[in-house]
Image 1 (spheres, rainbow, N blue to C red):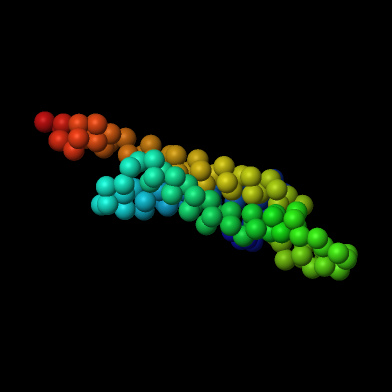
Image 2: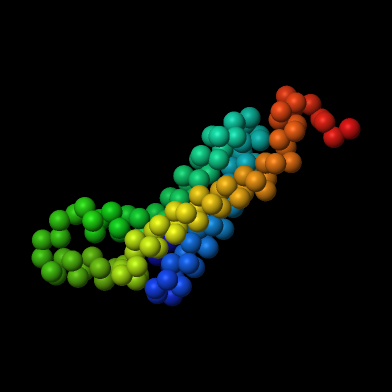
Length: 130
């Protein structure tokens, strides 16, 4: 997300909470799309979790990958790479909490938006509320 949040553990928790909310909202959109197109719940949940993770942790995860995999051949290149990262000391914790938050938000969205339709889906689309 690369938002100007607090540094340290508080900033990591804020990023995780924002990712959690993104997960719920993205799953809500996918649940609506899935209902209209007849997608299976596994596909809806999977795509919701993947897209929420990419949206919530995309830039931070890319920075973590870049720092870990690219050969920074001089201290100047390392310093330049770290200068563009908000709270580079806690980047790994931040990415981990963003991924956990996005997936957990998608699962909560599944629980919130799909449980009321479970009986109808199990009955093959028949209205079982009567």
